[in-house]
Length: 340
Ligand code: NAD
Ligand code: UFG
Image (cartoon, rainbow, N blue to C red):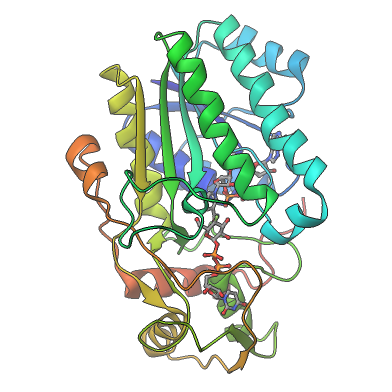
């Protein structure tokens, strides 16, 4: 299939491009580079062994720009990663998050249908479950109250896309609810490249390990979890990338609406991650216990059985692979990608 990959220069998008080409697909990337670097696409092409990945620096809110891309290519499906994703920033800038993520997706989907492309895989998030009613979380678990505007954009866009599919059954809509993506391509050539101080655990750990930050703050050790620190379902980004390849097969089978948790089903605490990182990589990660972070929940991990049964997808990488590949990327690229 020929796939439009929005946000393809970003962390998950760049890894997905590799798995798409490995599976025999081709891709065109559309990204406004607001949170990414074109160097990632060069490196993706190098890993795949092609001259370049077709790329358009276009914003998904730019109807005319999108129209030009669709005039030059015929797409079988779109994998839609483009969006703003910083939880804390979304609380400060709700308008920007709703306008970019929701406004942008509405324009994208309209241009898609006008050009006869009615297949979309959307990057949703475990955040739509809020404080989940059941652990492990199945897709039958009701959606909850999100604690920030970023989460609401995911929850609302799920509804928007499902309503569009109900009104026009020619659409196939796959909502992938990612748990906590970490790790990097085993080559160490591409990985997560956050701007400024990382919000997420794994990039913070790797930046402490590489000497860019003094110590990790562990946000709370008084949760109702085995060691008191927060428990999450960390998933290797290459496994996550492969879930999109499997979702394309579901689209080929005309799945209608498909909703899937994408996680390993294992819950690891903050201290489990830190200890695994130190053990596997032989580098120290100084840390101290800090107060709880507002909006955090104690435990979040999924039951991924539905994705296995219906998509034939399951995670293959374990915690040691995740911490090894995260460190491989960070240690070889201490400052991330070079400035373009
Ligand atoms: P990322 O920021 O690395 O990638 C997103 C890409 O979208 C960036 O390259 C950015 O430049 C681009 N972009 C943003 N707004 C755009 C716009 N208006 N037009 C065109 N391009 C735009 O993030 P990621 O970690 O790769 O996440 C990809 C998707 O997965 C996002 O939608 C994110 O919300 C979702 N997600 C991420 C996580 C996570 O923890 N990383 C968890 C759940 C869901
Ligand atoms: N944590 C720390 N110190 C840090 C950063 C995080 O102790 O410096 C802890 C958090 O308190 C939490 C765990 O590490 O217990 C994971 O935190 P992350 O920020 O890495 O991830 P979250 O589970 O909070 O959120 C992530 C994404 C969201 C997404 C959600 C569910 O950031 O976008 O997973 O998919 F919605």
